[in-house]
Image (tube, rainbow, N blue to C red; front, side, top):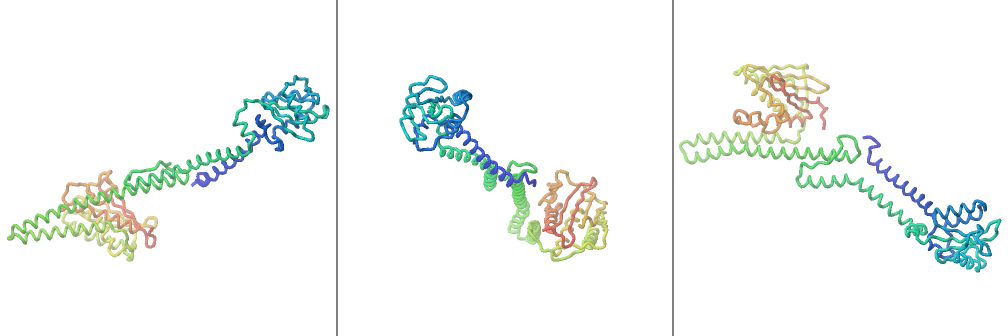
Length: 456
């Protein structure tokens, strides 16, 4: 998986960026609000409280800027912040020669009446008077006239540090909530999908990329794969149950009929008892094959030579097939082909496969059986010259009770369990089996690992 597509990296970078954004925005907003003038209520604060940063900066400029640049600075502040500034002498005149409003003069006089104070605040109608000193003019009174219509929220943020902290916490909480929701949406979808699957909605799937993505995409793909396999298994079990019921119904019905006739016609009882015995043997064979097809594990405690085994099976098959002109031909590229097995299980596997080929190959034809060593495995092929299997059904030939001709009788077609038993047993051996049409018949290909190479 690509490191940059990892969910861990995404979470790490996301939270890192959020932290940087919060700290950066806090610094920027602090600088911004500290650079803004206080509201008109600022002048009502305790005179012993430290002055606002904007006031200190403005006072510094008013005290140190040249007289020539002073008007431009005052006009700039007025245009930008709508704050009027008057610089009054002891006589109450503005050093820039402007007309002084009456309230400005009054608050200036009030400030001069307080002696021994280096900083004083007096308010009246949004006015603030502060003593300053300029080298050319000496002691002056700077009177700030704040606008009365300033927005309440901006003024509160400007004057209250705790309010800015509270706002930052709320904004960061909203950002982190959205980020967390974004990251957990896939997990929530997985939770809901799991619940739907648990209630029996086997077609439940999650939207996921075909490849790539982060851990949530991998988890979604794994969930979809699990759900698909679970659906296939349950549907196969349902089909198997239906097929078993169907297969058992006919012999049981014949048993019931034979038993009833034996009771009604005592003179023919031996005949009906023989029929009952025959149907009982069929039921026993069917149940035995069903148990074999559903085996879950084997212990590979025996080593078998495939060459010798297949030679013997081909000899037996030729003996059975000679009346129909059918013939088995065996070839091998090695003198021995030892594989691990469980007792005579491989004998049953290949006996089922060869009998299937014997049944379907046409009269006066040949069935080829071969063993070759490929990539450290043994490959066994059994190719008949029969009608083959429809391409759409090639994946179904190893299913329980599968028949190409579903209408043929059980006496001629068996139960359809031979290849199913063979496939399940081969999988337990660590092998695999496939079926392909050759154009002249059906070819069954089996691969078995060498001893000790079995994949657990």
